[in-house]
View 1 (cartoon, protein in one colour):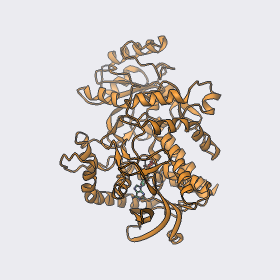
View 2 (tube, protein in one colour; view 1 turned 180 degrees about the horizontal axis):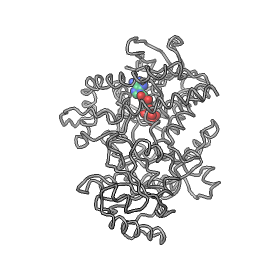
View 3 (cartoon, helix red, strand yellow; view 1 turned 90 degrees about the horizontal axis):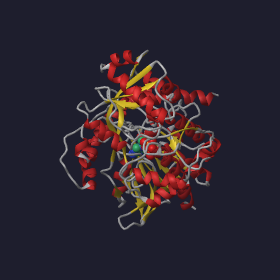
View 4 (spheres, protein in one colour; view 1 turned 120 degrees about the vertical axis):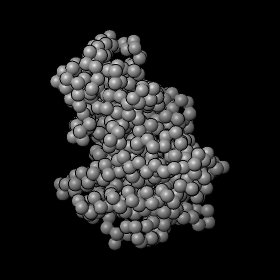
Length: 525
Ligand code: ADP
């Protein structure tokens, strides 16, 4: 009970802190370098100062609400000089890795540079994709690993690392079972863009997956007595005689320590908050808002490159089509998955809302206003709990009638009415003759009151990253593993190819996070 209270406090604090990071748009002028690796090395210094400011901001808020110890993190005076496995980053991948490392007989530690755990995982909304799961079977949803594989490959335009993808789909069902076995139940199933089956697993009440998942993982980390240090910024991974042997980590911005280990797992997430790297690898995305937390600055990639690790797909950055712009807040795909449509300022639909994210983004960008409205009814609202949060944040316009909603939105009421009438007929006939949508059509949009959220695209996810194999070993340029060095989660590249399907990221961090913990523990023996 006491622990749950602590966790609750911590999550509220987390949400506040993460919000601090929202909209942090540290855009800087950058030359149009083409060599990814040089670009990353060059941006290191200016990124550090941006990052420091962001961390300070976050720390200020943390101090005001709670201290790290109160929140259940490990006090600094319990730090040891040596562990079996060091895990860098306390997002979903890092915490899953830690739990498996411990379960497989190793003695792990987690270092997290922010004042809180959770990373971008905390912000994830839609759910976790998985196939052939017990929950799908219970609910009569027919699915197979092969279909999951094919649809992900199609969504990634046939550019995914197929070995990684095969491992991913084949281990997805087991990952859902594993989470369930540690008290994290994802049994409410929906669908996301680019998928043809219901395989996006969410918490029972349909709420956003991130907070629930992070809370559950943290509870397990505490129960297993796994040390988790926050404000622990890893600056370097060290090597001796060709083997990784530890890290240099700066605590509370002041104390630098060398901590040794037999293996290191890098789970530092992506670089979606590093405007410098983004401007270098994708100048066309410069200045877009980002949905990422401030700590997603690509540190792991930079540290691994220094050890000879190689990267893939660094220019493949996912722009999410539905981001509330003032707060850079992602509006989850489940809203469309549960039936919402997108309409333009003219009040018209303009695309298959559940096409892949890159296609929906491109469609929004062809509109003169380069933004759109998600329109839905009270049925969608009741099925997607996250909408309550969007309402609290002031994003949602409401009308008791379609006309009233149109007025709120400032768009033609006749046209919005006509659009909804046509759409509701398409739902009834299960045939969207206008844009060929086939999913998220279980329910029409006819239950008042009606709602709308204005959105536009924003930087969301970095698909590229360090190259690993299915054992999560980090590979050098010749394709050989760097002994003792493992990586998992958004810091890695290849699985998603050129386009990530919604719900595949949470699946990736659990599946490959677990694998990293297992393999690193094996390595230490
Ligand atoms: P994933 O989804 O892959 O688990 P997340 O973004 O959820 O990634 O989590 C990555 C975590 O790693 C974040 O909490 C981030 O603050 C942390 N992190 C990033 N760089 C460092 C670093 N240099 N030292 C310690 N922690 C880091």
